[in-house]
Amino acid sequence: MTLGSAGSRAAAFATAAFGATALGATLLASPAMAQSNGGAQVVGHVSSAVCTNPSPSHASLKGMIVGFSQSENEQNPFRAAETNSVKAAAKDEGVKRLLYTNANDDEAKQVADIESMIAQGAQALIVAPLNSTGLQPALAQAAAKHIPVVTIDRATAGTPCTDFITFIGSNFYVQGQRSGEALAKATGDKANIVEIQGAYGNSVETERTQGFADAIKKYPNMKLLAAQTGNWSATDAQRVMEQLLLAHPDTNALYSQADVMTLGAMRAMQQNGKTPGKDVAIVSIDGTKDLVQAIAAGRADADIETNPRFGPLSFQALNDWFAGKPVPQQLIMKDFLYDKSNAASSLKSGRPY
Image (cartoon, rainbow, N blue to C red; front, side, top):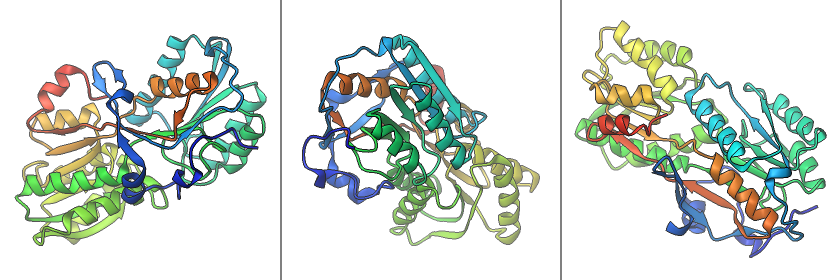
């Protein structure tokens, strides 16, 4: 049972784990779609392909039960900021009740969580998928009950307008590209690099890895010595960095795919007699306050933000859906780049989370 669609299905996702080609083909700059949250513009691009409710109810979210399925532990600053954004937006909308669950990195639990919220009467769902696959049973159950689903942060397998009405997130491939360019700038295009990647099999890791690899291809003196997974964990990343420094003592640059891992890697550097930001140039992804503070202190070089402010956009999409207005199938966030030129001023502005 489809939720409804408008426009050509040919313009829909070819795959949930999109890359640069898919984005380049389907996204258009649209300043009119840009939202603001605390003074920070958060939407950079919207897709031309849309979904439209075939039976609009014009119902107000104020009288509805909305479910939010979080995928990971909120000790991760990104997840905490993401959850706070959704909860704040729900309060602003005056929803009758916000059901909240956290899968704590367990795919089976996330499916069960979503099914439980449906059983509790959720009339709309916001889902932060743990992985790019695995949610099909829960999404099918929502579709059968005509419950609109907004997916955030990570794309998941499914058909737009059938399994979900929109995806709101970052372009992880471009984040990887920007990281490569930032590291080239920080090292004068000459570096012996080690890379700490996210959990394997995850679309975020895949895209960030490929984007970085493609970016440094044009710099012959930017050499990737080794890459290992840090599993999005500070503890794992610290252990991995210790091993990489032992195996490659000539390392003078680090690309880390998440700030939480970067902080662990920096501890390993210090314990091995290397000064972060001086002996080892560091480029990371996420844009958390701790890492931006490190840049301002000269202990890191650059950080590509992953904007977590999904709440207002998610509820706007749901409002538009129930009103019968077209909802873009993709909203791609506008991610800021922190470096030594703006880290201190950004901290004063309160942008880093």
